[in-house]
Image (cartoon, rainbow, N blue to C red; front, side, top):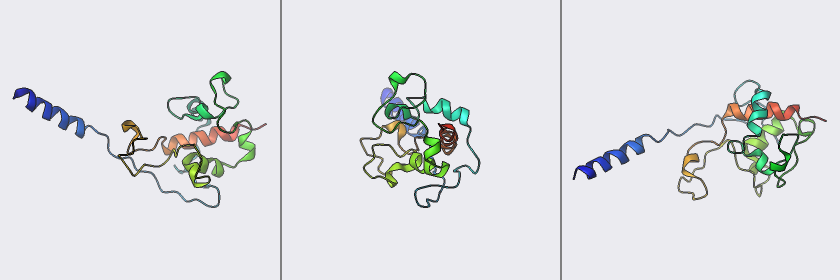
Length: 151
């Protein structure tokens, strides 16, 4: 009986330890861009350069290649990011990171700044449910870094 009480208490504490749902700040899409920063300020390009290479966090180099270290670990499923800062504006980059599916519903690029509404979706690992993949600050850091990638 004592183990049953312990098991019930343990499962209750795990349930209450679940982090609260993170909120996504509202943003406006104009054409093919989100012109306004999600944070109200510019990101940090140095942090963005570090983040883009974190295969377990941003996932960028799993699909994209570019002028990053370890070319042999970079993907080829998505466009090369070399010179992307010349081709796309900060607002265009921001929308593509936030929700590429808005521009191309068939894109395999995940929505980085959104929250899945179906918590029982088996394609979303439990650790990622109820929160965006990247924070608004991280997205702004990536935008700042990608803007530096010019020929």
